[in-house]
Image 1: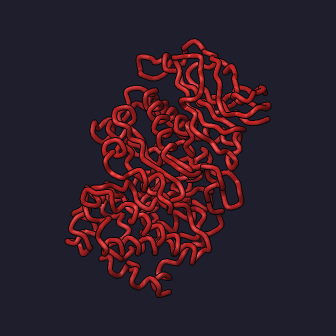
Image 2: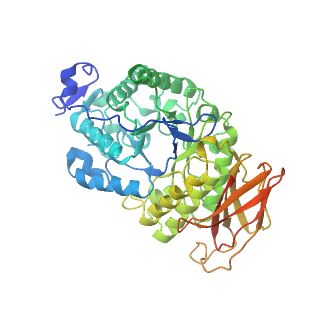
Image 3: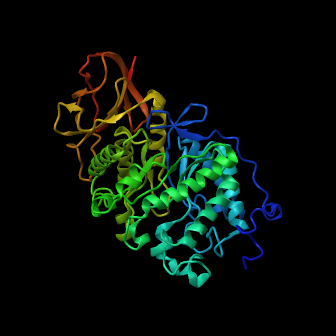
Amino acid sequence: MYRDDTITFERAERRADIEAVAAPAIGRLPWIEVARGAPYFVTETGEPWTPIGQNDSLSWIELKGLFRRRDLPAVEAHLRWLADHGVTCLRLMMEYAQVRHRYFEQPMGAFPQNMVRLWDDLFVLCERHGLRLLLTPFDTFWTWMHWKHHPYNRRNGGCLDGFHRVLLCPEARRAIKARFTFAVERWGGSGALFAWDLWNEIHPAQAEGSADCFLEFIHDLSTHVRGLEERLYGRSHPQTVSLFGPELWWRPHLPLKEPIFRHPDLDFATIHLYHQGTIDHPRNTVDAAIHTGRIVRESIAEIADARPFLDSEHGPIHTFKDKKKTLPEPFDDEYFRHMQWAHFASGGAGGGMRWPNRKPHTLTPGMRRAQRALADFLPLIDWPRFRRVNLNEEVEIASAKMAAFACGDDRQAILWLLRTDARGRNRMLRQDAKPTSPHVRIPGLGAGRYRVTAWDTRAGVALGASEVDGGGAGLSIRVPPFVADVALAIRRA
């Protein structure tokens, strides 16, 4: 049924085939690139840009109107609303294999026109509203789970007997590259494409239990995509490859860190923050933040250059998927906000990208307010010149009942303080606790005068600002009174 409604990569160079779905008018939005010498992002014109967003899916409620153009106005209204709430980026997979009618190829090597048109429309809408996409070619989890239905399965006319050899099979490699070729030629000229996640959650199970091929696999895909983009557009989009974070401590005997954190072909590093117990099945809103800060610190320590680091997937996956429970909204809102600021203040680019893990798969209004609050904080830091190091364990704080998350260089710093002694019976932080105002010392800041802005992460407003003098041993200040948490932006006056 797809034979007359597809664009095959064997015929893709023929103009008549492409004209069956007219190419969209895209290319007006500035491209994103890594800042020179700083582990953050900027536009091609040098303006700071921070990824604030979440994972989404073409089959979930807020984007499902794209399919067969069933409700484009509703999708556009949603994207406009996201932009108004500080969202800059969505992470999407070209196909979401949990359902069978969103395959990007059907059969292998043939691209259904309705899916091509869907992506055309999405790129146009994203450019219109200034949103960008972190794009990955396969939904590897559901492809594995629903392998019997996938077009790459040999029984369905594909090239593989099992997904356990997808990283090793030469024919599969050619098909993967062909998918990238089609996408690059069609949408690679758009600034709405933030970056390529070349492979979602690369895993030893996709290579017969080995990680030995990871470096070569990533190099092959990276050079293919980058070479094609440079030939077509004279430049290339940033690239990364994601990993299910717990594999780093579950399989320490495998060579996982080098390809994820230090691969010479990749532009930034990303893992998925699913710490067992505290993040994937949270029992309070504090421990998830503490483990987020710890993981970000450990990840940054693995990076040998100035590439950015960010979480591109996190959330209460065990609670939702295995326990079949959706977290209470107020609890989830605080859990989300705490993880966002722990990631951000520890040196991650942006606040991390939540996998909703709610029913339906959407972020709550409270989470959107938290994203808006983070977006409004951003102008307080000079991002293109912020050469931060993590300072979570170096900050000195005159209280044992508080967790510190910080990063900085010799001219700027971010500090987020989270109380650990004010938990209520609902496992959240009490908002009626007695305010605290501790002394802190942030090391690394050079001698000079600094402007310190205190930020209410719930309301998204400044609590006040002051100027203080720092010596060569860092900056010592008394934090303005706060009840549960507070963020500080510190910048040379």
